[in-house]
Image (cartoon, rainbow, N blue to C red; front, side, top):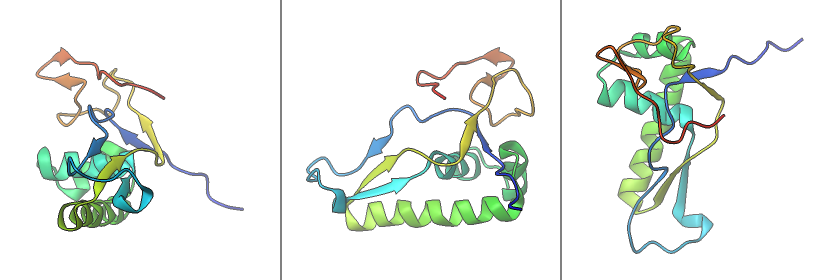
Length: 124
């Protein structure tokens, strides 16, 4: 019997989900698709300064899982930057946090400095 899937907890969807060269043609070969959970590892580790272990705890997954997600996310960022491809952030195996502070820490966009913030694009 297969192990049940463990959803990766994500604080918030990105404000913008499409990045890249302004003059890029709109065809499938010029896109790099990054999942929302890959985006979250980049946000937590590179922007917020968390370790992989801290990131794993916030996302409710194993550290080794975060490491794999992070490696893939960085490859996709590099491909987009180096090859001039559009980066599109969508999909993945994630669940948005509830914003109620359940295992949300200082990396959560919804709880910063004791104030409640909501994401403009919260969708499930």
